[in-house]
Image (tube, rainbow, N blue to C red; front, top):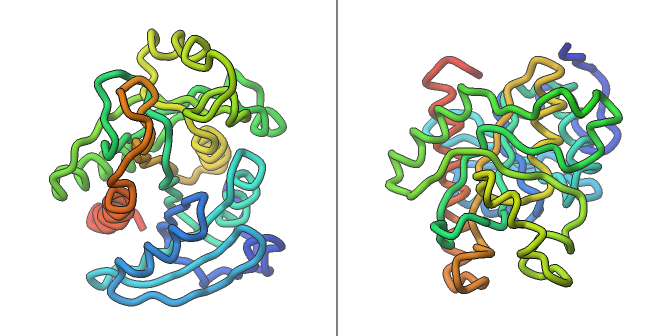
Length: 251
């Protein structure tokens, strides 16, 4: 159940009215500033710890962006507090490690759900509860990619706690550790989506995840020379998705 609270939230440092109904949530505060650059108008609302927020308008539609830092715990806190001040659509907007060999740097990944490899959400509910994206956000994200002419893939991702076990910079034979997820059709690994999806779903709030394939693990080069431009595309997809949700009457 959505438990809205009228008081200032301890970590994100905001009150009801400070955010738009749709909030894009990157991990990196720098991506919030990139979001602001792509808006017609935007202003800083709050900055505390890893939580930087801008709210603005694009084509007359209000959209917010709040960073949440890296990993499940700060994501859980940010998601909880955004819901308490009235967020209706919460969309992770981050990078990931693509693990399917057909995927390329710059591809957009739309998570239909996430493998719950993290453990923060087990504090809330057992592992039996699925991490599923809102089908409205999935539909809007796919439409956004089509409008922008960007390559996308929709499917499952894996969220986990230990970055240095499953990433391009991991120690040991990380590709062997990832192979079972490749074989099961999982598209990518990352560190936040499942946390957001579970907490939002439990409280009746729509959530989803739009991810950038920045470091394809099985696709040849593990460095993307066009990463900055691809991050701009990610932000464009997030903003366009928010606009489409507005068109659907979901804000």
